[in-house]
Amino acid sequence: MSRSYYGWAPYVSVAGRRAKAAGDLAALRGKGQAVAPVIIATRAIATTFWGRAWCDNLECYRDLAYRLERGRSYVRNGAILDLRVMPRKVTALVSGTEVYRVEIKIADVPAKHWQSICRDCTGGIDSLVDLLRGRLSEGVMERICRPDTGLFPRPAEIQFSCSCPDYASMCKHVAAALYGVGARLDEKPELLFRLRAVDESDLLGQLEAGALLATTRPDAGKILQADDMSALFGIEMASEEPAGEPVAAPATARRKLLARPKAGPGRPSEPPQPVADPTGGRRAEPARSRRKQRGVPESAIELTPDGYVKWWK
Image 1 (tube, helix red, strand yellow):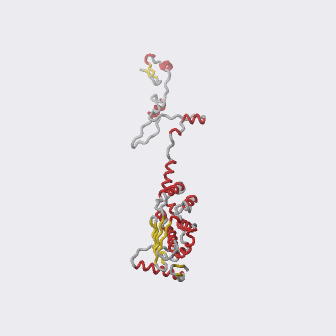
Image 2: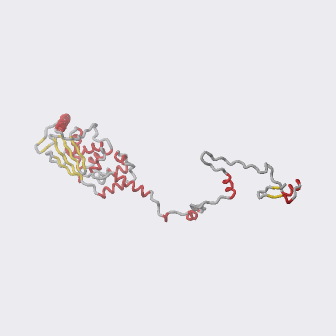
């Protein structure tokens, strides 16, 4: 049982608490009030990475431990009728003896603190989808969830207020609302960054900046030239021809290229055909032997530039 300013409250069973919470929720909806209740379908309050990390962070602070157990009971019994996560603030309606209003204020994340987290996580996050789904390396998980210097708030950064008459600084209704945040992170993990008023894409921005630095061209003074490579390894580097100055082909190669038929539309490129011998297959004979054999006068003989013998009748 719990105690208030008015003495010991009567014991209410779990079934009675659930029925009371369901009735209060129906009454709020009957008045036309928009509500977002926290519904726990399993024994565990949170089942995903971010939800469990939030709850584990709460339980590691001894300043909060003495009230957390009652808060877990309340949230499992459906006592949180409405929960809103906003930048630097959480508001909730919690069913108890009455419907109590809870407000939790979270301090800002210092700029240097957030920059330190982003810098330490550089290279450990592949995409925003992996970040929100909790697909992180152990180093990134440890850095973000670190109790004192991580992204989760410390007890000194949290201020509570509740409309209940409980004298404790953090009552069971506040504890239930804090656990409700962990359950909400199961559905929308981006709410953690919204609550801390930071941009989760900054974590990826550090990664992109690191990638750009890795692809930057080194200074000209740090690039080895061909002469430096030759002197360093004792080898000859192939010389490069200057661009825009074609190298002249040998005369024989030019004659072969000119002899090839040009390809055009409807005229596929074909291998060069053999050229007919103007002598009909006869090879030219020396001028003196042909003159002697045929009795042709020497004045009627003419030797062509290509080595053939021509005579006049």
